[in-house]
Length: 229
Ligand SMILES: [Fe+2]
Ligand SMILES: [Fe+2]
Image (cartoon, rainbow, N blue to C red; front, top):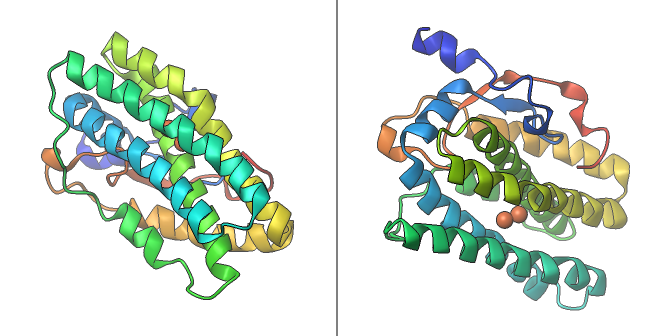
């Protein structure tokens, strides 16, 4: 199969866990192939992603300290992300892979740049961006859980899937409670397009593969924003 054809194919269409609401484009077979070729890089990056996910939840709690509902939702989420971080770190240590810094893909910065600066738009956008990142993480972990050639990695990703799915559902609920469904859905559609654009393109080097490196197919199901999680 040539690279162009491979890149345009959705992976694991038979795997329903890989099809996640919120996302307008499924990850490509080429991303999965790149990730499976460099599991060490994906694992290091995954550890950083878990650490950053905890940091984002804490950052939002600090930014909106009087919002009790927010604290009640995000405090356990942050703890859970740190547990995930520790779990990945333990595997890295067992495999004697150093937790070195890796150049991050443009993905996170692209999404952050789309967050509006004034409130309350900033709050809505911040929740949606965090949710989109959770959704993409969940989708790609589901692919690795099903298709990694490494049994231990399949088990790791499979074990993390349920909580990652819950996380993007929680961010959805935070939005819906505060902004209503119509406003949330409309802005989600705009930011989901940004998310898809951030993952479009061709990987410049195998060394740059990450949990959120480029590799998506053409838009999939437009109706995916009609409900949470
Ligand atoms: Fe996590
Ligand atoms: Fe998460």
